[in-house]
Amino acid sequence: MIERRFEQIIFASRWLLAPFYLGLVISLGALLVKFTQEVLHILPNVLEMSEKDVLLAVLTLIDLSFAGNLLLMVIFAGYENFVSKIDVADHEDRPDWMGKVDFGGLKLKLIASIVAISGIHLLKAFMNLAQTSRDELMWLVIIHMTFVISGVLLACMDRLEGHRAPTPKAAGKSGADHH
Image 1 (tube, rainbow, N blue to C red):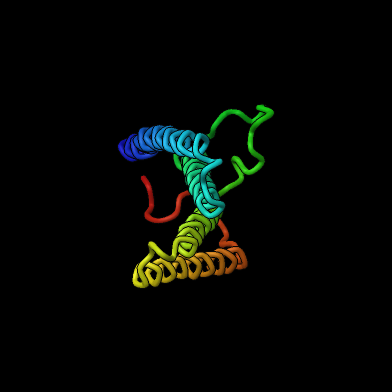
Image 2: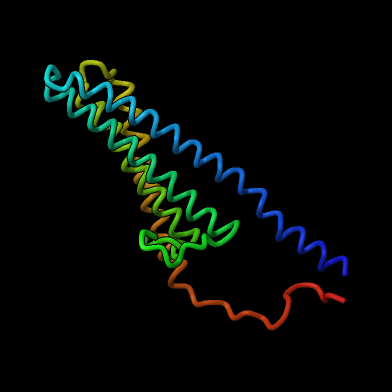
């Protein structure tokens, strides 16, 4: 009786994560504000901007879009994996991957997005060599390569995990005898 109640409390504790995901939704709104601010800054000046400055501005918009995509992936997949299923199965706009991304898949999507964001920052630094110090550029490359290597290692580990033979589930509860 005590064990069952304790397990119900532990299971219900997953709802403590819901405010985290709500906070991430608010963060997505903050990214939208920054994106809009950037667009409103670019549009009136686009005719006077150099091609390089337009490309840098567009890279900033892409960077913000990737960050938004990353947030949305974490919100959807994290909520579905750890809190509750999102009941929109019949909705015509439901993304195909929704409900199919497990924690391992989420990690790979996250690292891929982080590598893309890091790559954009690196490209912006290379396009702005006059304003980028040698040390800053070196660290940007080191950090980017760290993300790339981490992504490759995560993908390898995920692949190895997928090739492991599934462990048979024991009948009933595992561990200590429950009386």
